[in-house]
Image 1: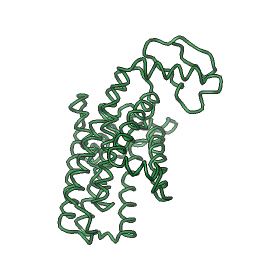
Image 2 (image 1 turned 30 degrees about the vertical axis):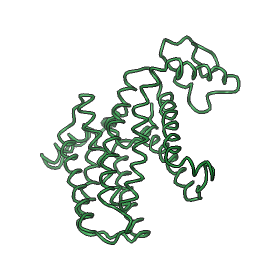
Image 3 (image 1 turned 180 degrees about the vertical axis):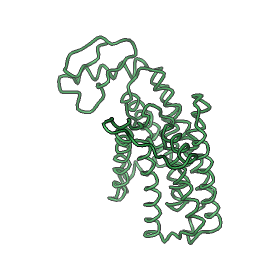
Image 4 (image 1 turned 120 degrees about the horizontal axis):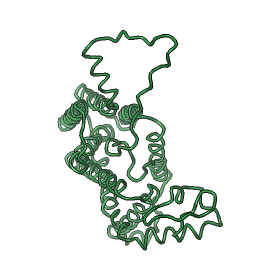
Length: 330
């Protein structure tokens, strides 16, 4: 079929090829709606085998979303935020096993540091770190968050493998993920709350706070994608560290969460591990060399242009554990 170009003209597309802008917002004018519908019909329905490949990560992502709610219901927000950083570890391990990717020594050390920090936080939680609601079960929360991290790591690496092994655009893959995720979510809703929904309506219980959570999730996913595209790994590491600090402060303010030295130590290790893992390899080697040889006294000769800055990689999705579930960038 013909792919719709940005100027409204059409160009022949190879089998399986997807127009880069065909699914981008604002690209389908009134005159191109028919072409877009034909494109989606062929890409999603005619090539159904390609579409079915997305059923696996979509199912896992749907399961992961529900596990996160179980986890946050049974753990303090700060503890959940720290523990959930284990997704960095699981993503790295699955990328090594499934994509034969290699990690630097600094990244392996940061993963060990991350695991140690999470273990300390969980030990503090098991020791009864401060008052908690009677209906919370820390054991169930820990199992849920670990299962969520495992599913996140596997689905992310599996999705990357699909993206790199086909010519489909990221927007098309997100659409396919959304179709399966919506269908699976509706099936789960009908199974668990079908009678209540039929009696009270689909949007029963959607208070302003609930709408705020929904909009925050959607906006957060798009915002993370913007950060991944226009920022670098170090900035993402700082953003993750800041989210841990903000969650801790909010937990203290809203739920009376108690921060003791053990939790502070574990959270500090996790924040440091996230920062170290986020360093580009070139910067990591430079940091290691500088720490081994002492301060550098080399100065740029006058009149010479400054050396190029180290750029972060944007094509390696497995080392982007901060990516949202279905919002990826080109």
